[in-house]
Length: 136
Image (cartoon, rainbow, N blue to C red; front, side):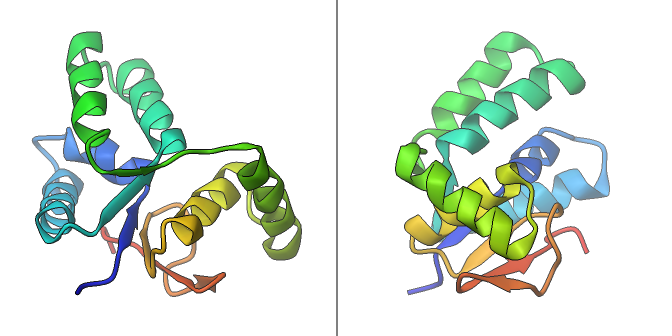
């Protein structure tokens, strides 16, 4: 079986962009991981997607909500207090923002070996999770 892959918020946001290179790349990687049954996200990613899509990208509220409902069908890791504390520890050890540390922690909890994001250092391995930039 292919490695479970954590999908960061930026991949979902770019997937909405019909005109750019990043949009095409995001849709390709997203559909490949969904078809393979390896896509993992977190409740944080669902929240961030909705906020960025509607506030910064001007996506219609109903369209963004529909997308959140669709993405919620993936393997979704819930953020709880224990994960926040573990992310604080990651923040201290690796110098990550708390938000990036929560993403990494959710990837670890989800059993992911890959994390697709443009927000972290590609090639870096954190807690056994390899960061890959799907747009590089």
